[in-house]
Length: 467
Ligand SMILES: Cc1ncc(COP(=O)(O)O)c(C=O)c1O
Image (cartoon, rainbow, N blue to C red):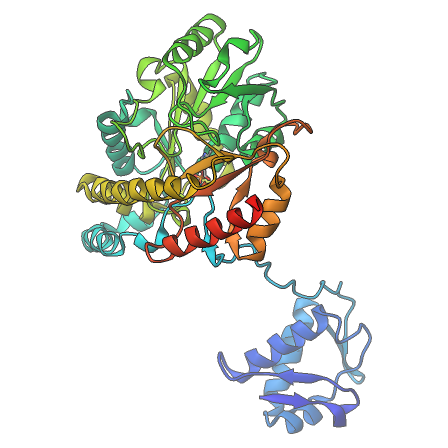
């Protein structure tokens, strides 16, 4: 119920509401007015009788509210002189909730995102019902900082079968995304005295920043047509982050000789290899190449995520660790957020256990394979553009010829048409003027319906640029 206290000696619009009782509403409104600075320190409040009349409350209700606020320190009440606003530091006005979630673009060709319109809602609901329908009360209690045992067991089994990862559930740690996996691991590396972690160049700038925030240097590990040039790794580098199945962003797998060289570097120097297997499930021309971890489980930390298979909304991911790192990583994870939300973990475990997870991946793989072929058909009309990478993942990198439209111009032209793609330049550690520009085109993010339309829009921008 809104009210203006103009007749009570000062002007204050207040709404004491009705939910929770009128006395509670009055207290809330007064507290908010004092804290926001709308009622300045020293301001006399209306008499209990006057305010009661004005608000249609009993005098006892107003008096009790004043007493309560006096006890909390918002008001001072002196016999004979009534209530006044006390000295309370005014808080800043409540900040607007920042709109951090990016709006969905008209034509969604962002790399690295799956088609979330195909999220397996029914399978998720069924798994959720099964999990909650038979859940003992402790399910809703505190979780395990290492991750729920059911999910660790399901993940260990799944990764062994599908990615050739060598593990047992006690070496799996569940996290809230690769972002967190890498952050936690970086803190452990810093604490163990490591000062530098080599990172692929080009590579994902966001993850470079995650490592840097832990106080680590991130020397560049350049990438060519055979993947990361691991022969250039210095002996004194403590760790390296690589994307062996499908280098991000170039899309090339790490050549077998380089895999071998990387294992040898790790064995010879005691260095740690962090394998970011972000989209290893998606290979379209053959069986996915098994994880590097499978041939060096004591030197490699394997990292996976459901962000590409199901959707980034879930914030669920895993690390498979060399045994000596399990304790330190679990402690660092616990210091970060206690444990990852447990119900989602249990539902995912059920989805994996019943193979619904793999069925979803198989069906997505078929659709993405067709979409990638379609993208390449469109790109074939622009021979000056060079597509890179093997048939895999959720995106294709195309580099631009010198002398034509620059990456920035092309990005701007795409943005004008509502097309979201990503530029290559920001993924370089230190972009130099001679570095070719490029676009990362995601073929998975659109819905089935939206994808052909997005491709037409992209083709028309590329045709304009070619003129
Ligand atoms: C290179 C790379 N690694 C890992 C991930 C997964 O990150 P997260 O599990 O934090 O969503 C992504 C997602 O964008 C990625 O692009």
